[in-house]
Image (cartoon, rainbow, N blue to C red; front, side, top):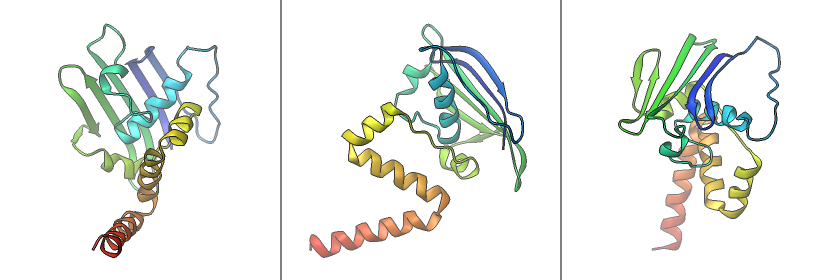
Amino acid sequence: MLKKLWVKQFRNLNEVSISFESNKPVFIYGYNNQGKTNILESLYYLGNGKSPSGTPLEDLIQFRQDSMYLGLDYHSQEDGNQRIYIKGSHKFGLQMMLNNDVVKQASKIQKMVPISYLSSSISRVYMEVPDARRRDLDSFLSVYFPEYLYQIKSLALLYTLCFFE
């Protein structure tokens, strides 16, 4: 369960903190270009270590800033209270931490906090680039069903053996 999100110097967001109350919906509303989508994108970034639209890190850091910071406190039944922290900078790239331990692979966090995001602009990308749609769908399903990725790879190998030998 999400407990608290904080975002600093991410796209057009100077500094935002949102506390989530248990079992209550969160409504994000406002005028256009105020950062509603950027809040959702920051959540996705925290769970996946990348932008849902494939935007490079340099373009996510707020204009005229050196770094951006994202953080998420959450509670899981298996692991209790957890904290994900991301710092992205022009100089050092992306640094991810889970409970003050450096995380080198985003997949570690994906398994603990599977976050997906779909927007109208991403839907357009999916319509125009079927490979992106397939890649993201495979990635999403493999988080929830670890055997799925193995089955996909097995099918690809079988396909290769049957049609290209």
